[in-house]
Length: 87
Image 1 (cartoon, rainbow, N blue to C red):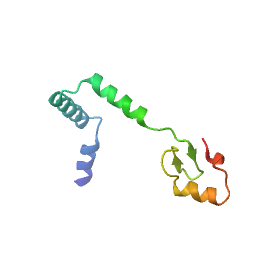
Image 2: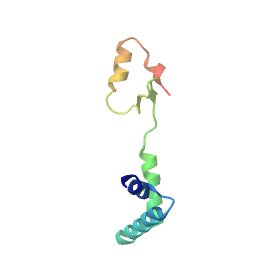
Image 3: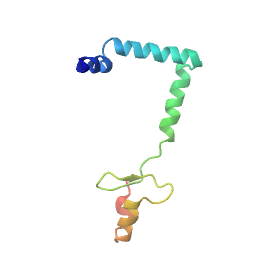
């Protein structure tokens, strides 16, 4: 029974997807959000994400802003050049 309920909840190809879209449209109307404003907000969020400048083999990354992360500080202290991690 629970499996069927989860399937219905996560079945976005059927009615659940359409209900979700309808709910979002109602909220947009309620708060006066236009599609243009939504698109502009999404673009602004994407532009605010800083590109990764340093990355190691384990998937750790740093955008170069703020304090050096521990993984990079340890590698530099161990004698590795910071340029080795530059993307």
